[in-house]
Image (cartoon, rainbow, N blue to C red; front, side, top):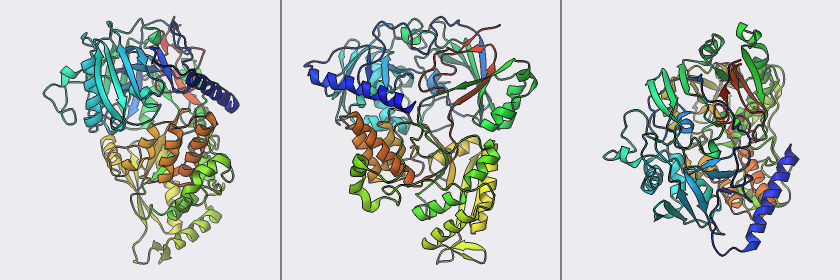
Length: 605
């Protein structure tokens, strides 16, 4: 699997090398764009390779979320929004193929042009592109969307805007964006900004004001009914402008999709067992084996489907907020890692059936290699050697723990590290020289029963070290607010990563996220080495250089001890009603947000 990924990657780079040597004098209009090489699909493609163009339309599906919501605007920082809305109701100039590491095809735009150095990008809008209210999508709407999201929208959209030199209309349906930074990925990122309707926001402040219902978008699904905190219903727009596009063939097949909200995972699962929900994703391999023996499943009315993938493991676990002492000390973080007895906890939660995540890019050819850094990876890291955490260059591996709850060996190592950091046990409590006890707070979203079990075991281990672990369980709105403002010591963390890492890495690990609310840098890391590795990724001219830079970044992240890793999600697990079908051909990314329900359909027996 890994060798095949690397072969595909090298072939793509070979294509881009040929493009460079051709020395084109002018940009050429194209139906798509790839980060490396050319798009795999020709201009006259019929459908995406993992979609069924003959899939029937119709049917209704109901999904479940835990928590609640108080907003339908996924583009503002404030409020809690059903996460699905961004993917179901809104579109960008280009659409992504999840069967290629990073390739975009025309969606709202019919074509894209870039020069050889990709210092600018020009899009031509489709004449038929429409918002859900039937009004045409104009260049003015596009320019307003880019500027508004870049200055007043959610922080995830603002980084791109700082790299825009200019944005201007160049024709009746054309606009050009010029960049102030040498970065070949920016042309692709430009194609992925959501497009909103300018007129809907006239007289309103996008950062603080609201509109009636959800913002107007161009997607196939429109919010038709909702009750805050309880449910959202979306109906497929019968006049959806893009229904006949090859990019949309075989997708967006359901007439109605509804999201019901539940207090916790247990109640949600009971609703699924009772037939109230159409499908659930299962992330626990042990529960997948033992919990699906209820009547509907044994009758065959519920089907269990596993979806393989080729993407990196990403990182799931407990993130430590280094903005707060003593978590800013790597020795304390290593001690907390040692105290987390993965073998015992994994056996309790998953029956030991899911292996541990070893690094952020583990499970892919981009993951760091075991042992000391060598060759080009070492050369990239050595300028930062004096500031790198121990193990970055020498080699770092996670503590393994043991099958007993006591885990004495690792707890002794943890106590030694804590003593080196100035924390010793005094009257059964771990204190520093000032007598301040080491007390930590873990923030948990209400209804997360799995985390309740994990923290219960972990808290007893920390207690044996003299550390007090306080659990704060809050509702969904409070959780989002506190996570946005980094108001926690530890909290649950999930960061999915792709086969084509790029500018989003700054949003995940960049120093701006230390103080900027709402970034993905939950750990508050401030690492010049990490940012230098990202620079090396974005300026790589050869495939080997790109891979070396990502592997070096993986070392910096892993040896930084920012997260206590959990178990991998090495395969997607979906339990669903038997009437729900999906294509035989699967994308290399497996079950992502645009797989289910994007390419599924309803087909009665």
